[in-house]
Amino acid sequence: MARMKFLADAERCIECNGCVTACKQEHEIPWGVNRRRVVTLNDGVPGEKSISVACMHCSDAPCMAVCPVDCFYKTSEGVVLHDKDLCIGCGYCFYACPFGAPQFPQDGAFGLRGKMDKCTFCAGGPEKDFSAAEFRKYGRNRLAEGKLPACAEMCATKALLGGDSDIISDIYRNRVLRRGKGSEVWGWGTAYGKPEPRPAVKPGAKS
Amino acid sequence: MLVGAIALIAAGCGEKPVTVYKQGQYQGKPDMEPWGNDTFKGDKLAWERAIKARNERQDETSRGTPTAAN
Image (tube, rainbow over all chains, first blue to last red; front, side):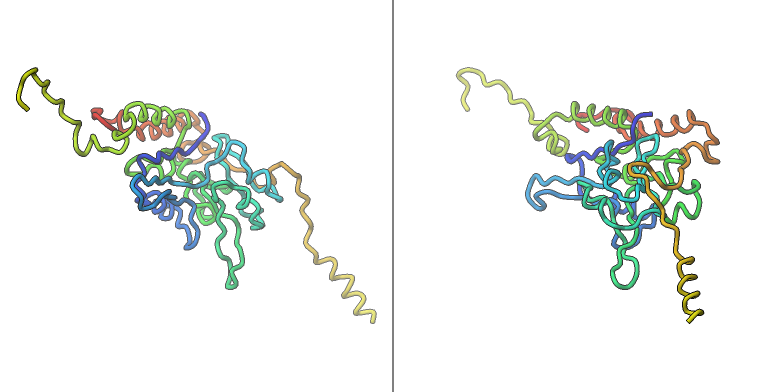
């Protein structure tokens, strides 16, 4: 088994936020915490591009490097997880992460920062699988059920792929080869068909 | 005076032990392997087969008749 990764296809994402909703619903994420979100560049301009962003489960994760209490670990599948019992909520990981993945729920009445929360690749955390403690702290453990992350599996256009990096990169490579470039990528050909070949003009014919 | 001194000395006993962290090494609880639960009962191959099937289902071109553009 290779490393587990996410792959977001900006040409396919329609900014429906289905992945965000799936994540929120699956793990019962509290208000104010977004483990996943959709970022749109040039919003409202023709040709805008959207991409779904969460923890990318980096191979050399900067959050792991900067954590002062070493609460991060990496599973044998390459998923970056952390122990919430050890986390002190300092926020170093938030500054280190290039994707803004670590989230800090408000804890208490005065905006006190709680323990860090982030995408777990639907792999739970360091608690007994399927236990109430695991669900409360980290959310549902779909990976242990033999399933992939809810966001990727729910994606209607399959813009967000998640799973074994070898397989999803093959899917993406095949997709790019098939769809070509230019208007084909935009779906123009799918919506309006290919331009009909013009009949050859005979020499001397009136136009 | 004596009672105050004893109370002051005893207060030190209530202090929480300081955890010494080893830099660069995970300090938390160990996690289970995803196949080490009641669902897969330690059968890693069965888990890998389940994940592979889910992985491949993400490719719509392999699920039906290929169309002109995908």
